[in-house]
Image 1 (cartoon, rainbow, N blue to C red):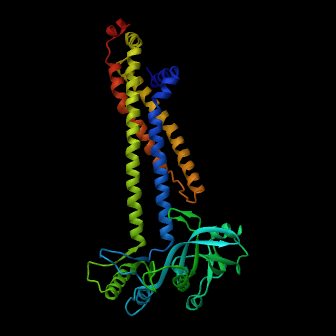
Image 2 (image 1 turned 90 degrees about the horizontal axis):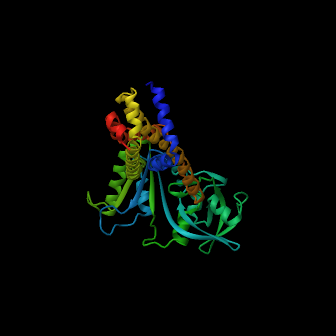
Image 3 (image 1 turned 90 degrees about the vertical axis):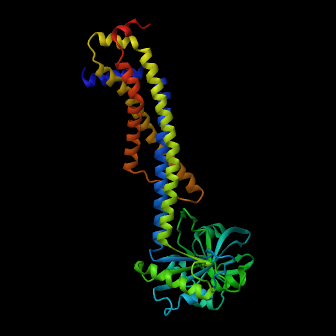
Length: 406
């Protein structure tokens, strides 16, 4: 028999039992859809995190209190000033300490819960923060303890129902009156939450008026910008040496932690890799169940069509013809399930993205050609692996015994 004839017979056999064929491929559909959705969301999340971190620059360090020591000392403004000393840290280009907390911002009966960040003038360059309207916080604002504030676009919208013409407006932050001097450009939702739901005030004003601290000049974090990406390692060593001396810590028991953007990228890659492997395992189980379903149905089909097989062999069909026909039926079932699964997975990933966007976070699923090819190959592999035994069993039937079957 020609291959085309065998293929047409396989298609006809599948089309005769549409309901059974549909139920048979359900496991494959679910498994492939899970693989596609999982890879799309995983790739999109990884790319989104990578873009966010890289936008900060490859030469940025994050210094936090903590480390391996018991009862660590908090980071202070004096620590940041010591790191800024070029004679002690020649690899450091800029330093931006911050003080962060959650507060209630209100105006004329409207209020919103938001993140307050006390910053210095260096923060805007170090964090690549853009101003849509007004001005940034300047050194004089910090020096004079001025009660000025820059609103994130989401906060501005919540309080004033607009994001423009707000310079000079008054806002209460935990009951304290601050004057708006600017509005931030919208940064949108990210994997770290909404970057628009924040307000910036001078660090000195935050320390004195808004945030309770264990020591007078405590800060939450210190951003350190190295001169360039090649200076990151030396900058980390210089910062560590300065803080050990100031905190009187011996080597190996630091009460602070220094991380680079590269370490965040590596951590993000590890986490998304673990998530992908875990979800891939679940999808693999679904594919396995789908494959077993195909094998069971194909075995039932062989029993139901025993007389047909015997008759075809009696009129000249070869064993290889029977083997190919039943193997093709299995392949067509698994491949059709794979195609439907790819389309369903694509739809699921973008539905999840839409729901995430509504909650203020963007995932941006990334479904690559490699993902589609992998899902297709998995479907074909399942069809071959689980269809080979029923096909071989059908091919080995003896014509005489098959024709005797009722």
